[in-house]
Image 1 (tube, each protein chain N blue to C red):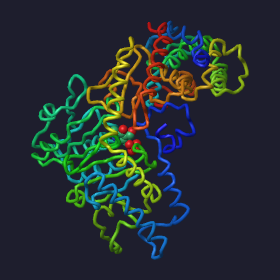
Image 2 (cartoon, chains in turn red, yellow):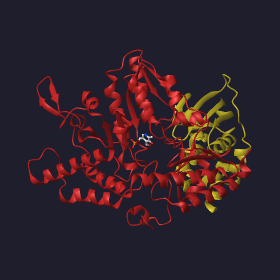
Image 3 (cartoon, rainbow over the protein chains, first blue to last red):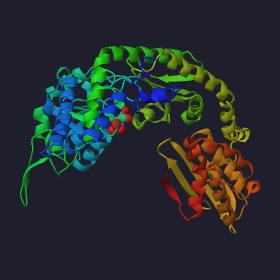
Image 4 (cartoon, each protein chain N blue to C red):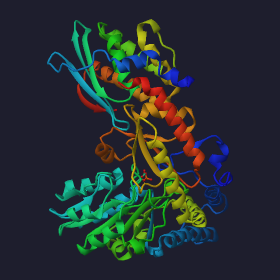
Length: 399
Length: 148
Ligand SMILES: Cc1ncc(COP(=O)(O)O)c(C=O)c1O
């Protein structure tokens, strides 16, 4: 087993078939070791101390910012640490809302995770702005053609996912961003599913903001990243105030630091940030392009095998990578999920915090197998075997 | 598949395929409550007609997994005709059954005893109790719509 030593959960659960990385990936031993190193060797606060240990902690913390920046082809000062993709997406939306007025339009899609669309629902309700959905094509893909149909002079913000967490399909964000910028709209990309699987170059894509979570890419829980193009990022006002983000504090007014620091109020996730660079280093060593190829191949293999089973409905497209959603026709996903659980296969059943797309599919939920670098063909074969058994088991139920 | 069969006992599958007392009357004589579990999509509406401190009629309607739907059907048969206070005891007993704890009166739970296997599947407990919770909420004097 190639990954046996790298992922302690695999080591401790040798029979586990883990197909739920879309919810959270397994964590690297080196990440855990690095967190331990922080807690046991120099576990003090950052940016504040005037003594040796605090310098070490601060350096380790800031080094991760550099590693993340390089990973995305961004500048170091363009990287903000948050508590997750959700808080990163909320941060941008809340900060941008100052610039949204009545009659403005915000474009999003039904592919979004709740965290990428709900913040804009709130803004639209409060400001009298309009939330506009890009229509999907028949397969569930977001196309440039359809984006053109909804882009107008009133478009202020375009908030789209790079990869759906239900269909696994990718968004042609580079072309969309180019068109959006012609209308001076801001593009906020949700990279929570895409960043773990594919090489993302923010300069090349030219998006204004990108959000993702460390725990979906081998890193620690409770940590996310917001990338923001510096000019845009620094023009936003913070939404949280307190220690470390301020410059000069007077009785009735204070000044803030420049980005990214003005967005990191209070003691940050020190151990998590310090350890996160180990995850990125590992992903770079494994090579994101190879990871993409591997994940894409396994995903398409699973899609084809599932489609070949009579009674299985698959919700995926030719661009799906890392995610396969499906149902056994006539059987609620929670009923089906019990069979997988019994066979030691970890997958997810439900709406995956993306009710708009499950509604679009016309289902209450789906089964979802998600795939990452440590999965192999034998995992998929076990998934297929269990699905055949499940179809057989539930056959007599279908009314 | 032993624990699958432990969960999906014949009674449960049978009620799922042929639900009893399904379909709402929606008249003034009934008190109605809709209970949803947004995290999984289970969605049950229960309506009851109470007369002389007894449940004279009870109907259910909704969408969800087999455990949820069949539990509503079984419940409707178990509680129909019973005194309200007794029904409240039966509901308590059913909760205990689902939690894997001792029940005071197995005979009174009747076919609902088939849900005993759910105790081994923590993820499914909410499915099993949704309809019972809706009924309990009605008996506590509420109606309308709620999320669990
Ligand atoms: C596409 C997408 N966006 C955003 C999120 C939110 O991530 P988190 O829960 O880590 O904040 C998720 C996680 O499920 C996701 O899949």
